[in-house]
Image (cartoon, rainbow, N blue to C red; front, side, top):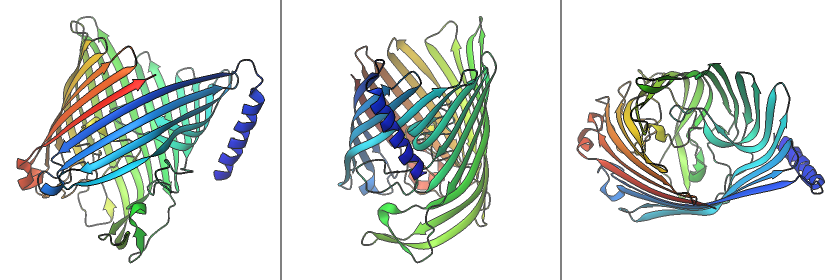
Length: 447
C-alpha cells in the first residue's frame, strides 16, 4: 500500500500543477480554535488516594482546507497544532504532549452518472450512521469508495496506517501498526423514514509477535493482536403521529468472530517491560441495542429517550474460548454509554433514560441516566475509565448521571459544559461507598 500512496501523491501534485491555470480553481478554508479542561475526581474510587484526581488540559488550533481542481476532483487537508497536558494532581505527576497532528489529507474524485460515486485516497474520517451504537468513528489511512443508486448507499474501505499521526511521536501507534481493515456498509432506504444498514469489518493484525521472556519498549507496548470479523445489521425508523408526536427508533445487532493473542507485561524497568505471559484465544461474541426518541407534539422543544445496550460476556475465563463481545476499537471515546465511566460494550448491559431540552435557539440541555451491569460475573472490565478493582462477586457496576449544556453563538463560538457523577455498585466492594465526579469545559471558536 505504501507504493500506492506514493503513486497517488505524485498524481495529486501533477493534477495540482496542471490546474493552476484553470479559471475555475477554488480554495476554501476554515480555522477553529478550541480549549478544553476536564477534571475527574475519584479515579480509583479512593483505593489509591495519591492518584485519585486526574486533570486534562487541551489546546488545539485546527485548519481545514479544500482545493477544487475541477468539477470532479478536489484535494482536502485538515491538520491541527495541539498542546495536551495530563496531570494526576494528587500525585503531582504530569505528562505533556505538543506537536502537529494530521487528521485528513488526500484526494477526492467524483464519477458515474446512474451510480453516483466518490473515491477518496489518503487519510479520511470513517463514521457510521448512529452516534449511539458506533461501528467506527476514526480517521484512517487508506481508500474509500462511496456509491449511491436509487435507495441504496454503499461504502467500501481499505485501510492501514502509513505514517505517525502526530509530530509528538516518532512511530506509528503500536495498536494500529500493521493492522489492515476492510470496511463495508450498505444502507437501504426501504421506505420513507425507514432504513436498514448492513455492516462488516474484517481486521487482520500482522504486527510483530512477541514471545515470553522478550522485552519491549514501554511506549511501544501492544497488549493485543487480533484477527477479527464483525458483522451486524441496524434499523432506523421514524413515525409521526398528530396526537402524540414524533417517534424515532434504532435497533442494532452485531457479532464478532476470530482469534486473538493477549500479552501480559511485568512492571517496567529502564524503559523496558518483559512479556511474562502469552495467551491465544478464539473469540465469539454478540451485542444488541435499541434506542427510542420521543418528541411530543405539544412539547416540540423536548425529546425524551430510553434505550438499552448489551454486549456478551465470558462465562468461563479459564478456557481459550472468549465469549465476550468487544467493539472495533474505532469507536472513539465510547462516550455514548457515559461521559465519565465510558465503558466499552463488552460483558456489559447498560440501561439509559433521559431527555434533551432546546431551551432556545442555540442553547440545549441534556440529562442522561445510566445503569450498568455485567452480563457475566468477572473481576475486571475490558475498558472503563475508573481504575478501581472489581471483586468478581456481583454484576452491579453502578449508576451514572450526565448533564450536558451546549451553547452555540451566531459568531462561531460554541461552549459545552459537561458534568457527571458515577455511583459504583456492589461489584466494587468497599470502594462502592465512594463516588466519582467529572466536569469538562470546552470552548471552540470558528473563524
